Length: 110
Image 1 (cartoon, rainbow, N blue to C red):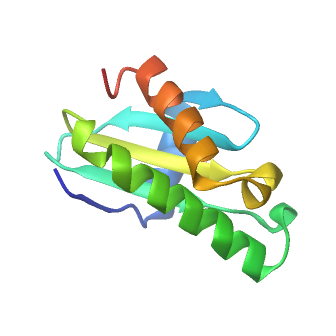
Image 2 (image 1 turned 180 degrees about the vertical axis):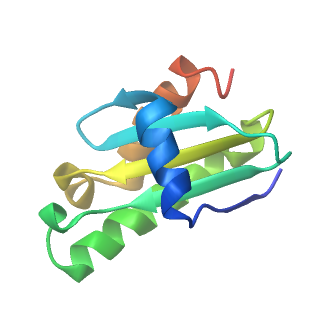
Image 3 (image 1 turned 60 degrees about the vertical axis):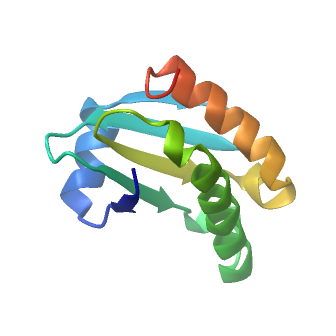
């Protein structure tokens, strides 16, 4: 199932307060079910991470890691990934491993 972008601030807020979350050194993941029949994904990277180049790299690495796991998600979920300072310094493979374990713990993928 192909995912769409999560854009509305209220959707991000809903996941921060009501969603389930998992954290690791590179990534924080928030997950909540939706009734839309689709997967919606949002990626945030705050100013703490660094300048625009570093923030964009962090988002790109997270997007690449998620694209490899996207097909394994069953059901309709809203997912928000929050980049951390370490995200800019690691390879996509490391983010992928952490993302996979977080999504497994949260029950999104088997």
